[in-house]
Image 1 (cartoon, one colour):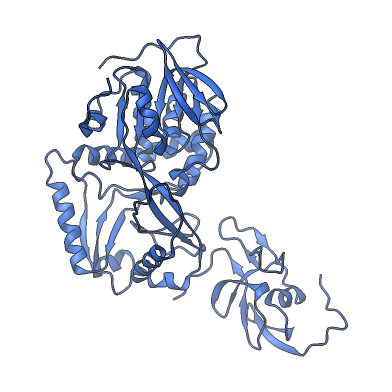
Image 2 (cartoon, rainbow over the protein chains, first blue to last red; image 1 turned 120 degrees about the vertical axis):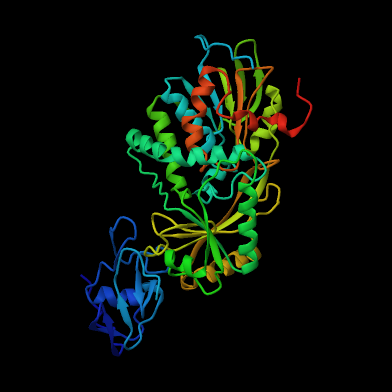
Length: 98
Length: 381
């Protein structure tokens, strides 16, 4: 669905999306990296289970919530990817941690 | 007590209920189910509305110190609640998520636990007290019910009669049910003045006049001002409570805790404050910080969650804390109903009060204890 701009030549790094090693670029937001990798539906809502995709990409809509390094409900569009970052899509309510 | 004049044709409505919150709507819905023509006159979106800001407990275990009839009345409502929830769902298709898993009042020191045990003992030692089952639990016993508690929890009182509900859905469902039964709801019709006539009441509102054979005042904080117009007395004052709610999380709280409850949708509500602040419904970080600290000591996992919203609401607090149900002696078609526990008592308000108001006399059901003459003021006539 999304293709990277040909002039976007930032260095690549590797993140884990639902446990699968995936290429991203330095400076990507988590939401942008997921969209670029084809993960359009990043979560299901906590009450009705409806699918959600990143929408506003500027921190307002909270539709891109994902679990990052074990912490649920992080705004994917407001976080920059790091090498080895673990990103998990959410299926319903977030966990409350052990 | 004299009875109200019979309802007959010629007026716009058989009954006018002043107030569209939980108390007014429960009574209005109950009256509409009895086949009465009812109008609800309500304020608008900016009204002080405890019904939208409350903590949504159906709470029995601490009710009735100083008035054992209140314990009985509360328990009756708790036991009628399943019937109310079922009737609402049958008539509207809306599940108000009533659950009665039992409730815990958690304490954070041995001294608090001792105080709690003594308070419940005093409550049950009152003459005429309707006993409800409860237990005092130590830390280990609480941990069996709630494995997520923190080390600071000294114990709890547990009562199987306690429960909770989705109060926003309850208010919505009562409105839907009322209007399906043909009831008339008028928003932005704040009542400014009520004129008792020979056999009807004329209600002056922000948007014109309405007449009804009988009138029920259930206007929350507004009741204090309106009651004297009908030779009634309803001393209620605002009492601020602050609430915060977390993001929705996987269920971890299978019981209701008096200051921490997980809603049917997963959010965790925290409420632990009482302030005398007049009509100021603002939120203050000092109070919220204390509430959050106590809540995290009770359940350390809350420290990892985000608070997504906090708000303050004004409780409707009668002078002595107990509900006021009364009928005007000078104008027997006029009734008043106000209390601070509109959720807990909703089943009584919807199922018990309407038939009494309909027959024209608010008597029986031990309601005498709730009349305003207990405030020892000179009667208004």
